[in-house]
Amino acid sequence: QVQVVESGGGLVQAGVSLRLSCAASGSVFFCNTMGWYRQAPGKQRELVATVTNGGNTNYADSLKGRFTISRDNAKSTVYLQMNNLKPEDTAVYYCNAPRSTGGVRSSWGQGTQVTVSS
Image (cartoon, rainbow, N blue to C red; front, side, top):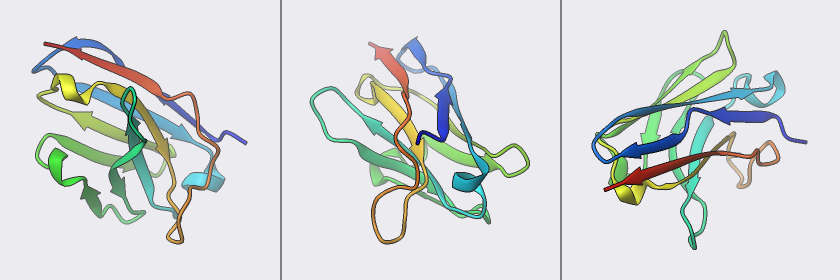
């Protein structure tokens, strides 16, 4: 069952910013770590960033300093602020709740496409 809805992607030029949003059901969001993932054409899905219920964040090394993950617990929503976008950031971005034992808590949603032109 899909319990996440991503939005906010688009076609942008290199150097600009985008803010992605993900609305999650309570059962997925409540008290769980949330994460953003992305899948570029021809590549496997990768974990971009995570945020715990208490607000602790973690990022893929290559994205530190440009991407910021945050969450609004009152709205069951997680955000990804992406600055200084590069063509290599082009991908479909997904959110989900990673399990500590592996896997995720929700079926994957449609994702939101981010395309960065040079």
